[in-house]
Image (cartoon, rainbow, N blue to C red; front, side, top):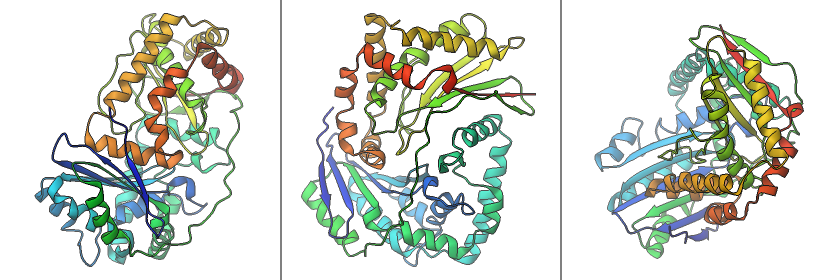
Amino acid sequence: MDMIYTKHILDNGLTVLLKEIHTAPVISHWIWYRVGSRNELPGKTGISHWVEHMQYKGTRKYSSETLDRLVSRQGGHMNGFTYLDWTAFYETMPADKIGLAIEMEADRMTNSLFDPSEVESERMVVISELEGQENEPTFRLNKAIRRTAFPNHPYGTEIIGKKEDLLKITRDDLYDHYRKYYVPNNAVLTLAGDFDTDEMMRSIEKAYGSITPGKVPEHDIQPEGLISAAAPLEEHGPCDITAMQMVWRAPAGNDPDIFPLTILDSILSGPSSLNMFGKGSVANRTSRLYQKLVKSGLAVGIGGGFVTTIDPYIYTISAYVLPGKDPAEITETVHKEIDTIIHGGISEEEMSKARKQARAMFAYSCENITNQAYWLGYSSMFADPSWYTNYLENLEKVTIEDICRLAAAYFRPENCLTGIYSK
Protein backbone atom coordinates (compact mmCIF):
# COMPACT_ATOMS: atom_id res chain seq x y z
CA MET A 1 0.00 0.00 0.00
CA ASP A 2 1.30 3.45 -0.97
CA MET A 3 2.01 5.50 2.16
CA ILE A 4 2.98 8.75 0.39
CA TYR A 5 1.16 11.89 1.47
CA THR A 6 1.88 15.62 1.47
CA LYS A 7 1.69 18.03 4.40
CA HIS A 8 0.85 21.72 4.22
CA ILE A 9 0.25 24.29 6.98
CA LEU A 10 -1.82 27.37 6.14
CA ASP A 11 -0.91 30.77 7.55
CA ASN A 12 -3.74 30.46 10.09
CA GLY A 13 -2.27 27.22 11.47
CA LEU A 14 -4.55 24.69 9.78
CA THR A 15 -2.62 21.48 9.09
CA VAL A 16 -3.56 19.87 5.76
CA LEU A 17 -2.64 16.26 4.89
CA LEU A 18 -3.33 15.07 1.35
CA LYS A 19 -3.03 11.63 -0.18
CA GLU A 20 -3.74 11.07 -3.86
CA ILE A 21 -5.43 7.73 -4.60
CA HIS A 22 -6.58 7.29 -8.19
CA THR A 23 -8.25 3.89 -7.95
CA ALA A 24 -11.80 5.28 -7.94
CA PRO A 25 -13.45 8.69 -8.57
CA VAL A 26 -14.01 9.26 -4.84
CA ILE A 27 -12.61 11.69 -2.25
CA SER A 28 -12.92 11.50 1.53
CA HIS A 29 -12.68 14.77 3.48
CA TRP A 30 -12.06 14.69 7.26
CA ILE A 31 -11.72 17.63 9.64
CA TRP A 32 -10.27 16.76 13.05
CA TYR A 33 -10.35 19.06 16.10
CA ARG A 34 -8.10 18.48 19.07
CA VAL A 35 -10.92 18.53 21.59
CA GLY A 36 -12.69 15.68 23.36
CA SER A 37 -13.71 14.67 26.84
CA ARG A 38 -10.05 15.03 27.91
CA ASN A 39 -10.43 18.80 27.54
CA GLU A 40 -13.50 19.14 29.74
CA LEU A 41 -13.64 20.69 33.19
CA PRO A 42 -15.72 19.52 36.16
CA GLY A 43 -19.32 20.65 35.75
CA LYS A 44 -19.03 20.70 31.96
CA THR A 45 -18.70 16.99 31.17
CA GLY A 46 -20.24 15.94 27.86
CA ILE A 47 -19.91 19.42 26.36
CA SER A 48 -17.62 18.32 23.50
CA HIS A 49 -20.08 15.64 22.39
CA TRP A 50 -22.98 18.09 22.61
CA VAL A 51 -21.09 20.68 20.53
CA GLU A 52 -20.55 17.98 17.89
CA HIS A 53 -24.34 17.49 17.79
CA MET A 54 -24.84 21.24 17.35
CA GLN A 55 -22.64 21.22 14.26
CA TYR A 56 -25.54 19.52 12.48
CA LYS A 57 -28.01 22.26 13.48
CA GLY A 58 -26.98 24.62 10.75
CA THR A 59 -25.39 27.91 9.76
CA ARG A 60 -26.96 30.81 7.88
CA LYS A 61 -25.70 29.28 4.65
CA TYR A 62 -26.51 25.62 5.37
CA SER A 63 -29.61 24.98 7.47
CA SER A 64 -30.05 21.87 9.60
CA GLU A 65 -32.63 20.59 7.12
CA THR A 66 -30.28 20.81 4.14
CA LEU A 67 -26.91 19.53 5.41
CA ASP A 68 -27.43 15.79 5.12
CA ARG A 69 -29.78 16.13 2.14
CA LEU A 70 -27.23 18.10 0.10
CA VAL A 71 -24.52 15.50 0.70
CA SER A 72 -26.72 12.45 0.05
CA ARG A 73 -28.21 14.06 -3.07
CA GLN A 74 -24.68 14.24 -4.51
CA GLY A 75 -24.10 10.54 -3.80
CA GLY A 76 -22.04 11.09 -0.64
CA HIS A 77 -22.33 10.30 3.05
CA MET A 78 -21.27 12.12 6.21
CA ASN A 79 -20.89 11.57 9.93
CA GLY A 80 -19.26 12.96 13.05
CA PHE A 81 -17.68 11.52 16.20
CA THR A 82 -16.48 12.70 19.60
CA TYR A 83 -13.89 10.74 21.52
CA LEU A 84 -11.46 11.12 24.40
CA ASP A 85 -8.93 13.34 22.61
CA TRP A 86 -10.69 14.58 19.49
CA THR A 87 -13.82 15.42 17.54
CA ALA A 88 -14.00 14.58 13.84
CA PHE A 89 -16.37 15.05 10.90
CA TYR A 90 -16.15 13.44 7.50
CA GLU A 91 -17.79 13.41 4.09
CA THR A 92 -16.96 10.87 1.40
CA MET A 93 -18.13 12.15 -1.97
CA PRO A 94 -17.85 11.60 -5.70
CA ALA A 95 -14.62 13.36 -6.64
CA ASP A 96 -16.30 16.06 -8.71
CA LYS A 97 -18.62 16.98 -5.81
CA ILE A 98 -16.02 17.35 -3.05
CA GLY A 99 -16.27 21.13 -3.22
CA LEU A 100 -19.51 20.88 -1.25
CA ALA A 101 -17.78 19.14 1.68
CA ILE A 102 -14.92 21.66 1.68
CA GLU A 103 -17.25 24.66 1.68
CA MET A 104 -19.62 23.17 4.23
CA GLU A 105 -16.95 22.24 6.81
CA ALA A 106 -15.15 25.56 6.41
CA ASP A 107 -18.48 27.27 7.07
CA ARG A 108 -19.21 25.06 10.11
CA MET A 109 -15.80 25.83 11.56
CA THR A 110 -16.85 29.40 12.28
CA ASN A 111 -20.53 30.03 11.50
CA SER A 112 -22.60 27.48 13.40
CA LEU A 113 -25.62 29.24 14.92
CA PHE A 114 -26.34 27.42 18.21
CA ASP A 115 -29.94 28.54 18.09
CA PRO A 116 -31.34 28.46 21.67
CA SER A 117 -34.35 26.37 20.66
CA GLU A 118 -32.07 23.85 18.96
CA VAL A 119 -29.89 23.74 22.06
CA GLU A 120 -32.87 22.81 24.24
CA SER A 121 -34.10 20.22 21.76
CA GLU A 122 -30.67 18.64 21.58
CA ARG A 123 -30.34 18.65 25.38
CA MET A 124 -33.19 16.14 25.49
CA VAL A 125 -31.63 14.08 22.68
CA VAL A 126 -28.29 13.80 24.47
CA ILE A 127 -29.89 13.01 27.84
CA SER A 128 -32.05 10.32 26.19
CA GLU A 129 -28.89 8.87 24.62
CA LEU A 130 -27.23 8.77 28.04
CA GLU A 131 -30.25 7.14 29.67
CA GLY A 132 -30.32 4.51 26.94
CA GLN A 133 -26.66 3.72 27.51
CA GLU A 134 -27.22 3.49 31.26
CA ASN A 135 -29.51 0.52 30.59
CA GLU A 136 -26.65 -1.39 28.95
CA PRO A 137 -24.67 -3.69 31.30
CA THR A 138 -21.39 -3.14 29.45
CA PHE A 139 -21.77 0.65 29.67
CA ARG A 140 -22.36 0.48 33.41
CA LEU A 141 -19.41 -1.85 33.89
CA ASN A 142 -17.14 0.32 31.74
CA LYS A 143 -18.25 3.40 33.66
CA ALA A 144 -17.37 1.86 37.02
CA ILE A 145 -14.00 0.63 35.78
CA ARG A 146 -12.97 3.90 34.16
CA ARG A 147 -13.98 5.91 37.22
CA THR A 148 -11.70 3.70 39.34
CA ALA A 149 -8.85 3.44 36.82
CA PHE A 150 -8.74 7.24 36.42
CA PRO A 151 -9.38 8.82 39.83
CA ASN A 152 -7.95 12.19 38.74
CA HIS A 153 -7.72 12.18 34.93
CA PRO A 154 -10.67 13.23 32.71
CA TYR A 155 -10.45 9.86 30.91
CA GLY A 156 -12.37 8.58 33.94
CA THR A 157 -15.57 10.35 32.85
CA GLU A 158 -17.81 9.02 30.09
CA ILE A 159 -17.62 10.96 26.82
CA ILE A 160 -21.35 11.57 26.85
CA GLY A 161 -21.01 13.28 30.23
CA LYS A 162 -22.89 13.29 33.52
CA LYS A 163 -26.62 13.91 33.59
CA GLU A 164 -26.35 16.62 36.23
CA ASP A 165 -23.96 18.54 33.94
CA LEU A 166 -26.08 18.04 30.82
CA LEU A 167 -29.06 19.52 32.67
CA LYS A 168 -27.28 22.78 33.50
CA ILE A 169 -24.94 23.46 30.56
CA THR A 170 -26.18 26.59 28.77
CA ARG A 171 -26.22 27.77 25.18
CA ASP A 172 -23.42 30.22 26.04
CA ASP A 173 -21.34 27.39 27.54
CA LEU A 174 -21.67 25.41 24.32
CA TYR A 175 -20.92 28.35 22.05
CA ASP A 176 -17.91 29.36 24.14
CA HIS A 177 -16.52 25.79 23.92
CA TYR A 178 -17.08 25.84 20.15
CA ARG A 179 -15.31 29.17 19.66
CA LYS A 180 -12.35 28.13 21.81
CA TYR A 181 -11.62 24.83 20.08
CA TYR A 182 -13.10 24.98 16.58
CA VAL A 183 -10.31 27.11 15.16
CA PRO A 184 -7.91 26.31 12.30
CA ASN A 185 -4.80 26.16 14.47
CA ASN A 186 -6.48 23.42 16.53
CA ALA A 187 -7.52 21.37 13.50
CA VAL A 188 -6.13 18.86 11.04
CA LEU A 189 -7.74 18.53 7.61
CA THR A 190 -7.15 15.23 5.79
CA LEU A 191 -8.23 14.27 2.29
CA ALA A 192 -7.59 11.08 0.38
CA GLY A 193 -8.80 10.19 -3.09
CA ASP A 194 -8.92 11.13 -6.72
CA PHE A 195 -7.55 14.68 -6.89
CA ASP A 196 -4.53 16.69 -7.95
CA THR A 197 -2.69 17.99 -4.88
CA ASP A 198 -1.96 21.47 -6.26
CA GLU A 199 -5.55 21.99 -7.37
CA MET A 200 -6.86 20.70 -4.06
CA MET A 201 -4.64 23.03 -2.09
CA ARG A 202 -5.99 26.00 -4.02
CA SER A 203 -9.55 24.96 -3.12
CA ILE A 204 -8.62 24.46 0.53
CA GLU A 205 -6.80 27.78 0.76
CA LYS A 206 -9.81 29.57 -0.74
CA ALA A 207 -12.27 27.96 1.71
CA TYR A 208 -10.22 27.80 4.92
CA GLY A 209 -7.40 30.30 4.47
CA SER A 210 -9.27 33.41 5.63
CA ILE A 211 -10.52 31.87 8.89
CA THR A 212 -8.98 33.60 11.90
CA PRO A 213 -6.91 31.44 14.28
CA GLY A 214 -7.77 31.36 17.96
CA LYS A 215 -6.13 31.05 21.36
CA VAL A 216 -6.66 27.42 22.36
CA PRO A 217 -6.96 26.77 26.12
CA GLU A 218 -4.14 24.85 27.76
CA HIS A 219 -4.84 22.35 30.52
CA ASP A 220 -2.32 20.88 32.95
CA ILE A 221 -3.43 17.26 32.65
CA GLN A 222 -1.26 14.78 34.52
CA PRO A 223 -1.21 11.17 33.24
CA GLU A 224 -2.23 8.43 35.66
CA GLY A 225 0.35 5.89 36.77
CA LEU A 226 -0.07 2.14 36.90
CA ILE A 227 -3.35 0.85 38.29
CA SER A 228 -3.26 -0.38 41.88
CA ALA A 229 -5.24 -3.59 42.31
CA ALA A 230 -8.29 -3.49 44.55
CA ALA A 231 -11.17 -5.80 45.33
CA PRO A 232 -13.19 -6.60 42.18
CA LEU A 233 -15.78 -3.97 41.28
CA GLU A 234 -19.28 -5.39 41.27
CA GLU A 235 -22.24 -4.06 39.31
CA HIS A 236 -25.65 -5.69 39.39
CA GLY A 237 -28.71 -5.51 37.18
CA PRO A 238 -30.82 -7.44 34.69
CA CYS A 239 -28.64 -9.59 32.43
CA ASP A 240 -28.63 -12.99 30.78
CA ILE A 241 -25.02 -13.80 31.53
CA THR A 242 -22.27 -12.56 33.85
CA ALA A 243 -19.79 -10.23 32.15
CA MET A 244 -16.35 -9.35 33.41
CA GLN A 245 -13.46 -7.14 32.44
CA MET A 246 -9.83 -7.08 33.51
CA VAL A 247 -7.96 -3.86 32.82
CA TRP A 248 -4.37 -2.67 33.14
CA ARG A 249 -2.79 0.66 32.30
CA ALA A 250 -1.66 0.80 28.65
CA PRO A 251 1.07 2.97 27.13
CA ALA A 252 0.21 6.27 25.44
CA GLY A 253 -0.36 6.16 21.70
CA ASN A 254 3.00 7.68 20.80
CA ASP A 255 4.93 5.38 23.16
CA PRO A 256 7.04 2.80 21.26
CA ASP A 257 5.60 0.14 23.60
CA ILE A 258 2.33 0.37 21.64
CA PHE A 259 3.84 -1.95 19.04
CA PRO A 260 4.78 -4.77 21.44
CA LEU A 261 1.30 -4.34 22.96
CA THR A 262 -0.24 -4.86 19.53
CA ILE A 263 1.55 -8.22 19.19
CA LEU A 264 0.78 -9.19 22.79
CA ASP A 265 -2.90 -8.45 22.17
CA SER A 266 -2.83 -10.75 19.15
CA ILE A 267 -1.21 -13.54 21.19
CA LEU A 268 -3.56 -13.26 24.15
CA SER A 269 -6.97 -12.58 22.65
CA GLY A 270 -6.61 -12.31 18.89
CA PRO A 271 -5.81 -9.15 16.94
CA SER A 272 -8.00 -6.07 17.14
CA SER A 273 -8.16 -3.13 14.76
CA LEU A 274 -7.06 0.27 15.99
CA ASN A 275 -9.28 1.78 13.29
CA MET A 276 -12.64 2.40 14.93
CA PHE A 277 -14.29 2.49 11.52
CA GLY A 278 -12.29 -0.24 9.79
CA LYS A 279 -13.67 -3.43 8.32
CA GLY A 280 -12.60 -7.03 8.40
CA SER A 281 -11.63 -9.33 11.21
CA VAL A 282 -9.33 -12.19 12.10
CA ALA A 283 -10.75 -15.08 14.13
CA ASN A 284 -9.42 -15.30 17.68
CA ARG A 285 -9.99 -19.04 18.15
CA THR A 286 -6.29 -19.80 18.08
CA SER A 287 -5.47 -17.15 20.69
CA ARG A 288 -4.23 -18.26 24.09
CA LEU A 289 -7.19 -16.98 26.07
CA TYR A 290 -9.75 -18.46 23.71
CA GLN A 291 -8.08 -21.83 24.17
CA LYS A 292 -7.73 -21.45 27.95
CA LEU A 293 -11.13 -19.88 28.69
CA VAL A 294 -13.60 -20.82 25.96
CA LYS A 295 -12.27 -24.21 24.89
CA SER A 296 -11.86 -25.24 28.51
CA GLY A 297 -15.46 -24.33 29.34
CA LEU A 298 -14.90 -21.34 31.62
CA ALA A 299 -16.24 -18.61 29.31
CA VAL A 300 -18.73 -18.29 26.49
CA GLY A 301 -16.59 -15.73 24.69
CA ILE A 302 -13.55 -13.52 25.20
CA GLY A 303 -12.04 -10.43 23.65
CA GLY A 304 -9.28 -7.93 24.19
CA GLY A 305 -8.09 -4.59 22.95
CA PHE A 306 -6.95 -1.02 23.50
CA VAL A 307 -7.08 2.39 21.85
CA THR A 308 -4.29 4.83 21.12
CA THR A 309 -4.60 8.04 23.13
CA ILE A 310 -2.60 11.12 24.13
CA ASP A 311 -2.16 9.93 27.71
CA PRO A 312 -1.84 6.33 28.94
CA TYR A 313 -5.24 4.65 28.77
CA ILE A 314 -6.18 1.00 29.47
CA TYR A 315 -5.80 -2.46 27.99
CA THR A 316 -8.90 -4.62 28.49
CA ILE A 317 -9.60 -8.35 28.51
CA SER A 318 -13.36 -9.07 28.43
CA ALA A 319 -15.11 -12.37 29.08
CA TYR A 320 -18.65 -13.71 29.39
CA VAL A 321 -18.67 -16.27 32.15
CA LEU A 322 -20.20 -19.68 31.45
CA PRO A 323 -23.16 -20.20 33.83
CA GLY A 324 -22.07 -22.06 36.95
CA LYS A 325 -18.43 -20.99 36.65
CA ASP A 326 -16.62 -18.70 39.07
CA PRO A 327 -15.20 -15.45 37.59
CA ALA A 328 -12.21 -15.91 39.91
CA GLU A 329 -11.20 -18.94 37.81
CA ILE A 330 -11.04 -16.73 34.75
CA THR A 331 -9.02 -14.10 36.58
CA GLU A 332 -6.53 -16.70 37.80
CA THR A 333 -6.20 -18.26 34.33
CA VAL A 334 -5.50 -14.90 32.68
CA HIS A 335 -2.85 -13.99 35.25
CA LYS A 336 -1.15 -17.37 34.81
CA GLU A 337 -1.04 -16.91 31.05
CA ILE A 338 0.47 -13.45 31.36
CA ASP A 339 3.02 -14.74 33.87
CA THR A 340 4.06 -17.37 31.35
CA ILE A 341 4.64 -14.61 28.80
CA ILE A 342 6.59 -12.48 31.29
CA HIS A 343 8.99 -15.37 31.76
CA GLY A 344 9.63 -15.81 28.06
CA GLY A 345 6.99 -18.37 27.17
CA ILE A 346 6.51 -17.29 23.55
CA SER A 347 7.74 -19.35 20.61
CA GLU A 348 9.05 -17.91 17.36
CA GLU A 349 6.19 -19.64 15.55
CA GLU A 350 3.59 -17.99 17.79
CA MET A 351 5.33 -14.65 17.40
CA SER A 352 5.27 -14.94 13.61
CA LYS A 353 1.58 -15.85 13.57
CA ALA A 354 0.65 -12.96 15.87
CA ARG A 355 2.57 -10.50 13.73
CA LYS A 356 0.85 -11.73 10.56
CA GLN A 357 -2.56 -11.39 12.21
CA ALA A 358 -1.78 -7.84 13.33
CA ARG A 359 -0.64 -6.96 9.80
CA ALA A 360 -3.84 -8.41 8.39
CA MET A 361 -5.98 -6.31 10.71
CA PHE A 362 -4.08 -3.21 9.65
CA ALA A 363 -4.62 -4.07 5.99
CA TYR A 364 -8.35 -4.52 6.57
CA SER A 365 -8.50 -1.14 8.28
CA CYS A 366 -6.90 0.61 5.29
CA GLU A 367 -8.88 -1.06 2.53
CA ASN A 368 -10.88 1.94 1.34
CA ILE A 369 -10.34 5.62 0.64
CA THR A 370 -12.35 6.79 3.65
CA ASN A 371 -10.18 4.76 6.02
CA GLN A 372 -6.95 6.05 4.53
CA ALA A 373 -8.05 9.64 5.11
CA TYR A 374 -9.10 8.56 8.59
CA TRP A 375 -5.66 7.16 9.45
CA LEU A 376 -3.85 10.37 8.49
CA GLY A 377 -6.01 12.39 10.87
CA TYR A 378 -6.40 9.86 13.65
CA SER A 379 -2.66 9.31 14.01
CA SER A 380 -2.21 13.10 14.14
CA MET A 381 -4.39 13.29 17.25
CA PHE A 382 -1.92 11.41 19.48
CA ALA A 383 1.31 11.39 17.42
CA ASP A 384 1.77 12.34 13.75
CA PRO A 385 1.12 10.67 10.38
CA SER A 386 4.49 8.89 10.44
CA TRP A 387 3.01 6.69 13.18
CA TYR A 388 0.59 5.38 10.53
CA THR A 389 3.02 5.25 7.62
CA ASN A 390 5.67 3.42 9.71
CA TYR A 391 3.21 1.14 11.49
CA LEU A 392 4.09 -2.09 9.68
CA GLU A 393 7.82 -1.40 9.88
CA ASN A 394 7.56 -0.89 13.64
CA LEU A 395 5.60 -4.13 14.07
CA GLU A 396 8.40 -6.01 12.31
CA LYS A 397 10.93 -4.66 14.81
CA VAL A 398 9.11 -6.12 17.83
CA THR A 399 10.97 -8.98 19.53
CA ILE A 400 9.91 -11.60 22.03
CA GLU A 401 12.05 -9.79 24.59
CA ASP A 402 10.08 -6.57 23.95
CA ILE A 403 6.81 -8.35 24.70
CA CYS A 404 8.11 -9.99 27.86
CA ARG A 405 9.43 -6.65 29.11
CA LEU A 406 6.13 -4.90 28.32
CA ALA A 407 4.09 -7.57 30.11
CA ALA A 408 6.34 -7.38 33.17
CA ALA A 409 6.09 -3.58 33.28
CA TYR A 410 2.32 -3.23 32.87
CA PHE A 411 0.42 -6.48 33.34
CA ARG A 412 1.23 -7.93 36.74
CA PRO A 413 -1.69 -8.95 39.03
CA GLU A 414 -1.02 -6.04 41.38
CA ASN A 415 -1.67 -3.63 38.49
CA CYS A 416 -4.96 -5.19 37.37
CA LEU A 417 -8.48 -3.97 38.05
CA THR A 418 -11.34 -6.46 37.65
CA GLY A 419 -15.01 -5.60 37.17
CA ILE A 420 -17.94 -8.01 37.22
CA TYR A 421 -21.53 -7.39 36.09
CA SER A 422 -24.12 -9.94 37.23
CA LYS A 423 -27.72 -10.23 38.39
